[in-house]
Image (cartoon, one colour):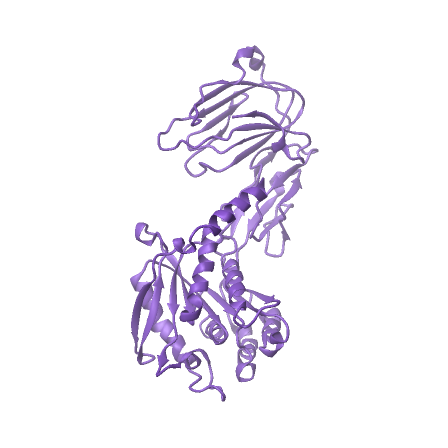
Length: 468
């Protein structure tokens, strides 16, 4: 079922125009005092920018005339599948002078003997810091956090910028960076500076080809420096791709770099399932946690998890829920949060004597309409002792009463989120009442069900007792 649903989502996305996530690009330019020239730029706003008040991250794309199309398409896909939030993209194309591309001047930190007019990265970085970024921040609704992407010399510049201005950007993403230039200047500079540098949840991604280019472009040296010396606040990953070229590695580097930058966004509202209920000490329950595209860690002794704690892998068995701690980490720190475990240890519930007076014709008699508004009221027969799970996706205002007690009440914050409540029940008749207030603005179904679990470890959703 899960695979079929995922396939349908992906098919829908692939059949839709990816640029639907972004508005038509806006051409603009800025007069630079630092560079003593006018620089063309292109602004690509989220599609809903004009209809909301959201403040967005800003991503700057170097070599904009080559890289922006690919970067925008990949970002659009990640937004569509909720791996990343919408953002403002700023394409920074190179300047040409009499047909000569000045990228080598802007992107290299020091003069290179075989490259004409090179070594101007210091000025280009000042252009970003003093002119371009303040211009964008003043004209658009921005979050205050930015990312930069560069490939080849652009990747060289990106890591240079990180070493020179570690807090200027939150995200530094590169594709096949030319780190071998000037006697491997950037890896050597990183080795010298890292011990005295302070980062605060800064994210670095380096992608590129595997094979001979890995040592030839000093990727191996950079990886070694990062492994041994990267400061604690710098979260980084290095990716190698087989059967790619210097140009084709841009695609995968974009994809992996953006995914890593926003790791944790997909599970920012993650919950464990069952998310409410009672666990018998001698009968462990299997707990599910959505772990796709995440870094969720856990402990089972009551201590707070760290990034080095055991990683959550879809499910685990628990017998003392009060001691379980779940925490979702993100490289940027923006999506770090504790995942609540709202189960408790306890004993079997027993049917109240009043339930024995129910007549057979009240067995879940209800006035539920097609849109699920109304009332379900009656009793359910529990034939044998064991775990039972209530599952529903309720709108705001829904109340669930069981055994004459309020079991669940839904507010706006938890509306339309799946609720699963596991309870150990002794055999007998139990009063059950579900109130779903009518709301003409919300005709969403309730998806209510009561399921039996043989031992708390099985696929209980395959054993329905009641479904509405």
